[in-house]
Length: 391
Image 1 (tube, rainbow, N blue to C red):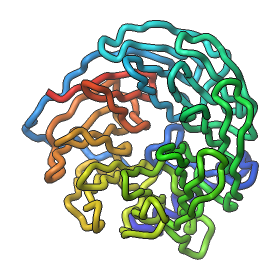
Image 2: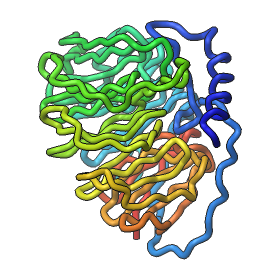
Image 3: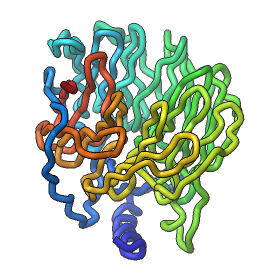
């Protein structure tokens, strides 16, 4: 689809959203990997035929409530999987067998989750309430934040780090939910209603923002370590200038990479924030990284493998057009993505060719697959939880 046509379709979406926009900036939903978004009129590509080189099998499956308009991730801690639906039902499953160990009613509708850590299960609501439970499902504390919580909270050391829809990142005490620090930045007048969370690693909090910015914060006190530009706004209208980083960054010991909607994919030195390379590969779904490549699901459904050192194209799989591919998950010799019709596709790491495919429950997989010891998990919009393995 030509860019002018794409902008014209999005303008219609913006007009529908303006009456309900509030806060620091107006928020727009797109049709790429974000549940509850509007249909932009593109028909998903037909599934291509291929000869599987491996088998994708279902280890077990469970059910939680529908995700509604949210993007809800399962969380894996040790031998347990925690998952929730928008209705507030939170369940714990055995990671190996899928046996349900408990199920509770959180008492609120859930919009962001699940997050989990040692003896801590976390979920957020559209009213800005952060709910904390212990590993047995017993309520621990509740914290009221400034705006809706659309992404999974993170437990790190003695802190809980959570992002709200008004551009704030909070660090709370994991024992009682009391505020330790808050980081805030103003949003542009027009931004995506993003489900992007944060990454906590190496004593820092990394997060992308509307306007194409990537920020590193000190985990202990919230001070800014560095700020980098993933993409610069371009175009004559506010709509054309949206370059939001709408998915979490990925990182290793040396590099951190992020991708922006209507922008670029870029990698930076993790210590300084200095740019390493950038490519014009925009994404709203997200990316993954292994020791060789960075993998990106772009806004049209193609999956790209880019050399981690240089950004050069290694391969591109373009047979998933308009199938709203999720952020990838790396699995050794393979890369897994889910799609809008509930299929999971396994791509060969070497050339991007299709290696295997499996159907789930027919509803969209909007959240990126999550790694398990023996495979990986996907959660569907209708509340299906599928543990899959590569044979």
